[in-house]
Length: 599
Image (cartoon, rainbow, N blue to C red; front, side, top):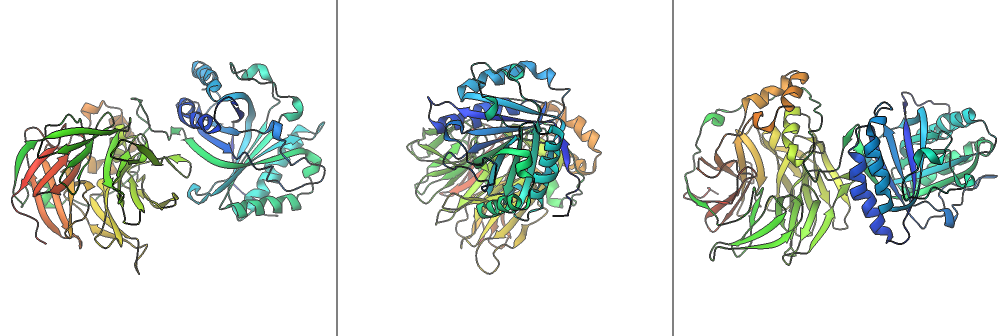
């Protein structure tokens, strides 16, 4: 234990202890706290980081029995969770008085009692940070100082003793500690939320611990408890709460929660990226495969992002406003089958006959044709699924899906491209509901499909102008390959592979100005990002789709123009026709294929 953890970051922090309302269902209180209340808090500019830790209610305390220290959590004083906040600047705090009042007032919707504890300047420490994707067990340790003990000695013991020793344990991935200033009710008197907590039940410090698993977490607590002989001298109570769920709502001054109503653009943090020169095909206005534009379906849909079909030839799509539609080409009848109340993007079929819907506001959804909606994935490792883009499912129910960026909302997707920072992910949801991040740092991953044998997934990286293949079964499992590189345009959604080939919707040809921004000084890109949307680079008006076989060879290249449709983002083939969706245009376009792709 003689090693030292260097470069520990100090911060000004807040830990709020929360007791849920007893007249409401526990799950309902947690849902409100992690939903509307979290959204309200996370939009505040004075907050740098904001986490919620929801506690298990059936664990007596994780800290090992320690002589002269109370470690069993009393049932009648059990806390339901804490809010962990790192402030960006104390100067900004008074500027948010009105917002703080709204937050305090809103607490009554979830809590019957709250107590807010604040550190001094530098009274919080980030002792150890690690990859959040590897954290599968957390606990929050709340500590009461020994009566008449020295506050300065207690502070040193918490930061340099307990927290530091926990950080040295190999099983521990993250450690953050806070030592509170003396607490008094008047400063933090939230309306309608009781603060009558007796002094003997107040706490003076907190430590948040994240580990690779429960066994590793318990092992770390046991090791530190057995080695530290000063615990009883400084501490009278150590209550280690088991965390059931951690919600990461704001990171480094950026909210992670998708906006439900128009909001300000998030800040741009550009990186340098050099892209290869576009191929000559980029500058040709037409493709090599002829097609005939038949027009648009008689549909009320606005800005549909994707389109799929069923075995009977019916067409399915979702648009602005949240509605999911079914269209019968024979009867020209359009039916609303569900309403996500969000922003549906990619669609796919599950073997059970339900729809997979990637919703930019609500995450990955399962939608039955009778309108019932089930949320499959809303958060991954505590972070909201901010920009769920497209999905594909195997016959055994495993789902692979993409998140185009975890830094920008759907409404501000252009920021991810101007920034040139890879912030997208490829994820997998197992049949037991567990979600894994397979690839990170991707450049706007988008459409995705399984190959015919279900041994690999093929996905589009829109902002890298390529298709990539990740092998998921067989001897090459885990290998990542380039499937088609340096494409002439922006690949978007991918149709399900059938008959040995699949279609890729090509939004628009590559944009020279956007490519050049990768090497443009950051301050210039920030100025461009501040411009109104109508002044940002526009997409060329074209209708375009390409077909690829299982080996990555181009089988068809259909490009042309139409008066009332452009910027295809979704495509599906059925009954000798292509149906296209566009997030930039209303309606579903119908094209006759005059020359089928060569197998």
